Length: 123
Length: 225
Image: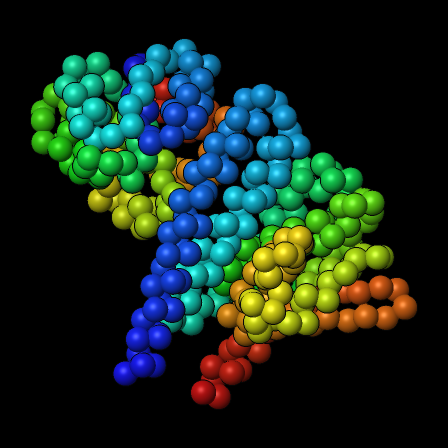
């Protein structure tokens, strides 16, 4: 499984890549919506970890846009949100777009991310 | 007219501080993640606790901004407190403080807003642990009872800031050490839940406590309303 990590912070990007690697997944990184769409266009990614508050199109706009293309509709999305409650309240609607998990960004840790990704890899 | 301009300026200032607090979480998160990667448990614990305090103040600000009353639900005060104690354990060990929790079973549930309660307990214990961190020591936490309550005390602990629970400005001054920050957060959140912090001083030292309505009391109040 190949993953894409989208977050403005390089430290957060590298941290997520390290956790992906520990699960045998390769991962690329970028920091905004335009770069993300360019990378997603390649059709290589099955999992995207995205901070909804990225620049140049928000994370949610990116998810809507990707879902408008048939070949990108199977992507699993993990939201890494500073305000997870807002997204968790709308999880049913987000699930129809492929969002499988909403994580609190400030609670990010190897244990939390590893647990979430492991469940997805084995799903 | 002048009053409304002043109110608007205060609102804008509050929004600015809210955004600032929110954005400052990223560099602290980065410190936390780097500490974890470098296996520096002490730095990791301090960064994680600081982030939690930021989250607590943002939560408080959101409650003020919404202007709505907190919704109190029947909850177990013991398990709600144990979750926080578990999270603070590493931080306490890092600064050589032992958390000694004693629980007394409650007959019913307490009327709590769980997120507000947990942020408040977090703030309260964070202040108490920080206050003891110079020399280390034991922090006693009593929780539960027929009238659900939480009490925190330790020998040699200064908890006077709990007495000025009404004014942030009275306690959060630029030259303060930051030890009282969590206590102020706790005072504000407990007040939003209708339960003020009580400060006691006697020959054994200082303690702070907070008592909540039991669910039975809540139903009685509802039926009389």
